[in-house]
Image (cartoon, rainbow, N blue to C red):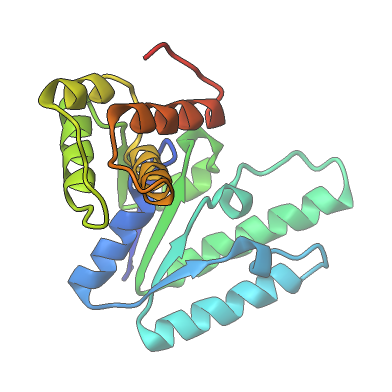
Length: 214
């Protein structure tokens, strides 16, 4: 059948959404991100109706459909313990059929591949894991992001770059640290130094419920 179905899976901040945007740019196609809060409805039949509109417009406009954090729609079907379970499974069955018939590109991202219904997994042509960057890649991300800052000075030595690269963070988390460092340095009208960057790293580690000594 026509169409291409792609699954991106991996930890948050590893570039799944960014890669979908890059693909759209390379293919000169609009990427339509499905806002699940606007699509999924508690009322019977409404979710299918909402999805039908999205699929119909996407085919007409040649959009790439991007289901970000798609576990809510593509999750494993439940045992039929209630009428709600039956209707939820009907939504999944409807999705399967629309995906099967969609002639364009569909990209689904999830943090955990095991959360996706096996019936959906069989329909993906490409399944790609997004892993956390290794220490060398983290060093490259730190250097690239900090070297692009123009509004204040960045005063980090080579040894300090190597030190912050040892902490395992995703590209998204490193971006958050750089943004935090930039805001704080500009607020106090100071250069970005290792102390500010470490503060930002600690904030990110707290978000992820993991703290390591730096």
